[in-house]
Image (cartoon, rainbow, N blue to C red):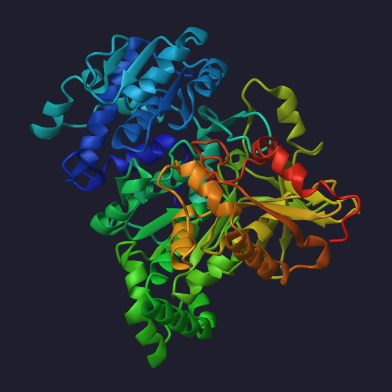
Length: 609
């Protein structure tokens, strides 16, 4: 088990391995460049010294607005080394939201990745107390920004010249930071309301790191792609853990580069949010569907996998000839897309659908699902090789206590639970029970063996006009298991019945339309007009109705979806329907599609369905 007391202990571990590789990054020519443990130390030391000379000190806030890259980690460690507080912001946020968070946090300085991010901060600066903008890319034409390299004087010589001893004065300052010191303010993604700044101390995150991943046995031979936004606590927690174990972090700043990066780096650990796994599954099914032979082969192989699910769930490799043949012809090719070396697949950030988890089991892959919140630093429970149960989020970490409230809400207490919301004492008080238990807002169950199951968000439960409670997430996850479905939003709160908005997987739908020979006059139309023509075509509507009917067959009558409406938009983080962890922003969707929802309930009073 790790014995960390602060996040600066993570830095000491990561920077004390000499010439061992700490990080990898892909340059403009597509070549992976390495940064050694010694180089990491020198870069952090130099940047922290420059920040201190400029006036950044204990308790000051420094915002980071950047994609995943080595400079993100260096900035993070440098800020924490000074006892300052970093405020990570999602690179996809628009300027107005960035302005609100910068103003609320009182950040004195912002570190940005590119000219695009610089422009957002420059536009918002008058509403903030920001005094300095530091930029990772070299852009001399931008007057208010200082280039990252200028703030690390002599670092290149220190890295390439004779080996330098560590700086005792700098190390003493780093070690002086205490567990109770504030480390970061992380703004929640706000699925149901305004974002709040979650305050996490060094001790909050360090104690969580000590227990969350210890059973995986990671070490210096392991590597992982860092592609989930580091502004999200799940990704950041993982990177801290891997740094602590001496593993190598390979930074992938763009999701589109992920397939290439997986093949080139060949990581041993893969961590994704459920939507990543769903998209991978859908892409495999879509490609198999392009050839009748490949489609039949995949279905045959999946049936062989289903026959051996019990063994795979126990971590065993089936020994039957049929399994070995299915593995050679199909499953190895799928895993090759991850680089072919991944030993541990982990999912977090949102609930992993049971259909998706079972599909990956069929191809011989256990996905270790975990659960937590930003407010809990984040891990509350996590499956692992020794304790795994499909559909659960694992067993609760040993240093936490949990219990269920009368309505099924999960309550938690322990050293990794946050200290409060930044400048929001009323919301902080409301987050806890009168006797000090943090209210997660999640409805949960626990089985006799101690495995935790999360069934839905308390605030997202739908209550029909007949008084029936419906959990939308499991239904949505079943729908998304079909390759034609991009995303789904179940509605029906205070209505007579449940209904659903479906955003198609338009890549798969286009192939389906062509395969069916559906004529479309598209030469003079734009993409949105083409999509609208597709979703209004009777054959397309019938195909999606069949998908809904298949899911309805597995549901009790009061949960069945009585109406369906297809939408022409793809729901994304950029267009505002999804959070950075790919969860639905239900409030946004309900507002944006109010006319379509009203259409589904227009005859509600007289409807028999």
